[in-house]
Length: 373
Ligand code: ADP
Ligand code: MG
Image (cartoon, rainbow, N blue to C red; front, side, top):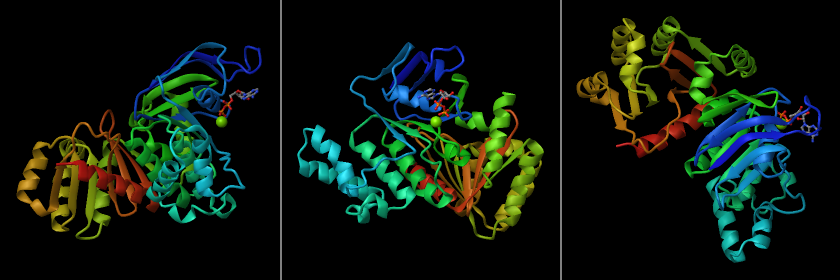
């Protein structure tokens, strides 16, 4: 969908003052890439280059033929003198060949789909920060781009507002948009990103699958960056290594009320049972006794999963996820908590305790469940 080769953009012609230098990277259709890095590392420059707002000094940028990339920055510039619906339809009315009626219909459908239909005739000043942001994104969508570039659109948001933004981004990813997102919010990046691009001094220090980036990070400098943003994100806690992994799950099954449900997406049960080791038996007895259900949607079913479904059908609900459906993370959700798990190297848990994020994951789970067989 898009490709950068050795892209270099210097703002001033001195070796050290640069936007980006020799950046190579590509993204395919429907991929969501989050760009992380310290302030001044070149994140905005990269997006602006992709949007065609900056010209390169060296290297090349190529975007698939007929594919438009639109850029939404944190200074969402809605026209203050126009209503929401007018903001959405103004540019298409001027540029597109479609009738005004069709354009209006498209805009209304978008507003309805994302719960903003009651604000169609309001002015931007009458909207909350989060609503303005979503309208700005939908206005970008009205131009029918294939690529969406978001620059720190979460920076001004409290968790409450981030919530509907999570759903919006997830829905757009499902629609097949390629998205490059600059953010400082760890729980946001973890929720939406397939891949992480980490920039340092205008160059790519790492380009990695999101789950691996966060949980199996080898680079000490990036590790300390992650630790830093994790600390700022009060809702996140990380549990690393076999012992902590086991203790976490035993603690979880003890604290969950009777008859509750753990929603599991992505992992094969067997790959979870392995790091649980000798504690698995204890966990399972406790779970059955408390009638806690595993509702699972995974790509394949393990041996233990099959046995459990046979033995305790009510407590083990299972659906197979077709390979065509992307699920970037192994996670479970229960009540207000999301538990992202990694089984490579050391078993690791990233716990996100935030009701809004848990709700968003839950809705994502429902989608996966409904796509399963
Ligand atoms: P980030 O978005 O990661 O904070 P930027 O891409 O905005 O980083 O900036 C990267 C580097 O380029 C910084 O050193 C910044 O000072 C410099 N820079 C960005 N825009 C300009 C500009 N218009 N003129 C001069 N220098 C700039
Ligand atoms: Mg920036």
